[in-house]
Image 1 (spheres, rainbow over the protein chains, first blue to last red):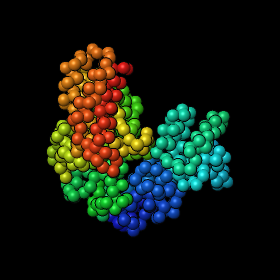
Image 2 (cartoon, one colour):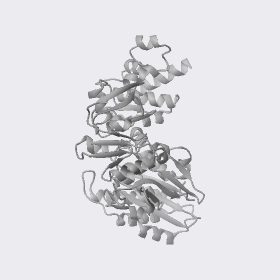
Image 3 (tube, chains in turn purple, red):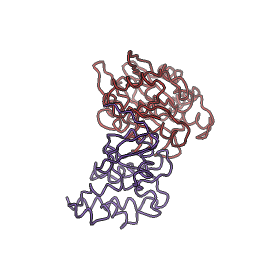
Image 4 (cartoon, chains in turn green, cyan):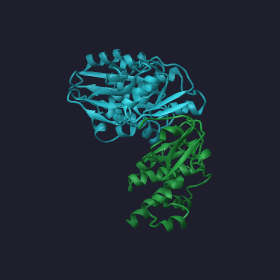
Length: 176
Length: 282
C-alpha cells in the first residue's frame, strides 16, 4: 500500500523489532534517527555524505550508509545495526549464549588482533566485514580490500584490520 | 514535509500527479547529502526504492538491454550484465564504495545529471535511450537530448525515469576515470570507449570535462578513417596518442574545487589514449 508519511509517526524494522519514530521531521537520515531517536548509537556520524562508512548498517541484506538513507523511506526494510549483529552471529549457537557473549566473532577478532585504535570507524567496519563474510565466507585479499574500501580508518593503517578479518575467516573455516 | 513510499509505478504516478512539485528519491546518495548539509529542504518527497518494476532489467529481442532506473550499481558489476555491458560494469565498480553501489542507481545518476556521474559516459557512448513515463503518456529520449547541462535534464516534473535501453555491441568496451585515489572518489575526469565492429565505428564519451557528457565526434571519425576497427588487432602508439589528443581538444573543462581545466584536459587525453590502447591489446 502506498504510504504518505507526514510528521506524525512511522515504523521501522530494526534488529528484528518494530521501532516507532514519533514527532520527527521526516527528512531525517536513518543515521540520525538511529542515534538520536532510537537509542542505537552504534552507527557513527562523521562525513554525512557517504564517504567514510562509519554509519554503515545492513538494509535488506545490503551494507549501506545510513546517513544517505532517508529514514522515512526505509519503512518496510529489514535493518540491522551493529547492535543487532550478535543475533545473527554464526559462531553463537543459543539465545543464552547471545546474552552471555558481549561481542560477535568479528568484534572479538578486532579486539584480539588490535584492529581498533580510536574506535570511531570500528562499528562501520564490523558491519561491513560481517556483510562480506556472510556473502562470501572465503574472500580473496582483493575482495576483502574492496569490501571495506568504503570504510575509512585514519588510525590503524588497515594492517591489523586485515589480520582480524583473516583470523575470523580461519576460525569460521575450522568450525565448518 | 511529507514522504510518499509508493509500491508500484501506478501508485507513484498517482502521487506525482497530485504533487508535481515533489522531489523524487531513488537510492538517496545525492539528495541526502544535500539535505544533510541543509542545502535543500524539500517539501514533498516521493521515494521510488520500493517499486519493483524499476528494479528489473531485461534483454530485448532486438539485441538491446533495458535496465530499470532502480537497479543498483552493484547488480551491474557482476554476472550477465557485466558480460554484455563491460563498460557499464567497469563504470559501476568505480562508483563510490560498496555501500554507495548498493544504493545508487542509473535512474539517480540520470535524475541528478551531474557531468561527473559515472554511469553517464557509458550511456553516451552507447547512445542510450532514456524512458520517461507520466500518468498518461510515455516517451523515449536519446541520452544526447536528455542531458541538457550541469544538473539539468529534459525530464518534465510529472515524469518518472523508468529506465534506459542500450545496445549489446560486438567489440571491446571499457571505462576509465581519474580521481585523487582509487576508491571512494568523484571523477576528476572520466571516459568511456566502445567499439562497434558491426558498424565499423568507435565511440568515445568524456565525463566531468564539460557541462554535459561530451562525445568526441572528431576523434571518432578521424580514427575510423585511419584503421578498420572491425579487423584491426593492434594500434600503433602514435595513432593512439593522436586519438587522445583529438579527444582532449573536444573537452570543455573548467577549474573547480576538484581540479583545474588544464589538468582535466590533459587527463581525458590520457584516458582516451589508454582506452584505445587497451581495446587493441586484449
